[in-house]
Amino acid sequence: MNKKLTIGVVAVSLILILIIVYILSLTVVPYKNEENATDYSKSEHWLSLPASVDKEVDVFWISPTTWQKVDDNDSNICNIDNPIMLIGTKLAFYKDATAFENVGNIYAPYYRQGDAGYFLSMPSIEERDKFVGGIPKSDVFAAFDYYIMNYNNGRPFIIASHSQGTMIARFLLSEYMRENPEVYNRMIVAYIIGYSVTDEYLAENPHLKFAEGPNDTGVIISYNTEAPGATDNPLVFPGAISINPITWTREETLATAEQSLGSRVINAQLQAVFMKNYADAQVNKTRGTVITTTVDAKASNTVGLPDGIYHPHDYPFYYYNIRENAENRVKNFLSKQSTSNQDIKNAERGSSGHTLSG
Image (cartoon, rainbow, N blue to C red; front, side):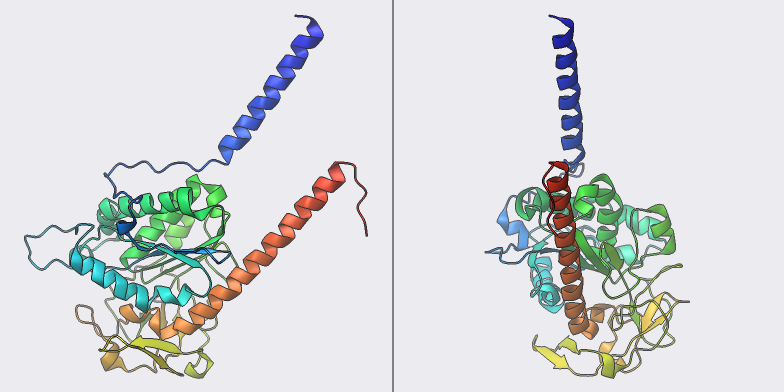
């Protein structure tokens, strides 16, 4: 082989290596199934799989706790086919996840949930993370990975969750998105509500950022709703951050109930009732929560939680504001994406030697 041919072969080899390295950098890192996760190729393990994909973006929804053990000797983790969990998850979807039905194709897995009473009795966030970070996390990670590999097809997406779902979503953002930045780049926003997102969590995960306003994208949105003077909220930890779900700012300025687009409360007959001018909202930076003063406190208190902790109502109180905000952020993301794609096309035309018009 002559010298010129040898140099050419080496050059081509180097180019091929660079191409392979680039392709590998875009490859999703597969989830390592270390907990014998549920098989999400089976449709029965999904509450919601869109029959037709007719929207430009997806929503991946992680349900709150919808199961609680009835006997102290029962396992602290339910089975994937537990009938109470299946029925409760459908109700939670109807109550919360439907806020996103106008904006995205909703994918919602069932997962083996931890008993709420058990993990809420744990005093530290580290102990709870260790418990929920076992089987429940394993299932949700496997479901999300299967969704990305088989259903998403490169579309932008929203992550939405509540309560135990948010505990797991925190792992999804800190671990999966760190390992798969090309997936994270397609995330429009993460509504991870009903459990603390803290300053410490964000400091440990500098690739993540909390929302600052009503239209920013690639951000986290979180809050916990309380009555004035509420204490002993088992969902709130020191350093918690909340955003106002009416104005979508982090300032302590009161947003009146008249500014709200309305609440959607589920009554005893499981009917959705529109409530106009029902819930105001004000960030309390000291507690890291959102305070509402205008709701029916007696009707909003929850068995098993201290008075004034409006945990199950985090979505319903601000349902229509969440719906509008999701639409705004999607519109903003798609607009920026379109501009970016056009810039790339223009750059490609310029680099190929074509004359740019205009």
